[in-house]
Length: 134
Image (tube, rainbow, N blue to C red):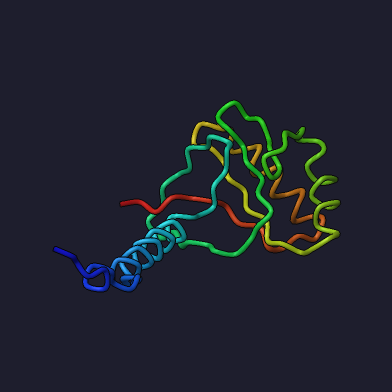
């Protein structure tokens, strides 16, 4: 008994339905990742919570003050006396708004000193980071 080869050979096909499912799953994954991306910083700062907080999405120059009163500019350690010089050198390239992220346990005087130095040097777009109270 001789079997015909043409009956068993089918042309190769690419199934589009599983491919579309995979593409949609990747799209959903990237959408969720982009939604979760906020201002992330490797400096551990426990922000104060306020009811009337609003979320900022634009790029900013970040000054962080941790619980041990150490000052960081864009995650680079800095001394309180050198903050104004470093901010001025960074702001010569582009005029970014300045965000001060102060830990709840840090001294308020340090944040206010930095704010006073920045305002006296002519920087008007200075804000404080907070978390929205639930």
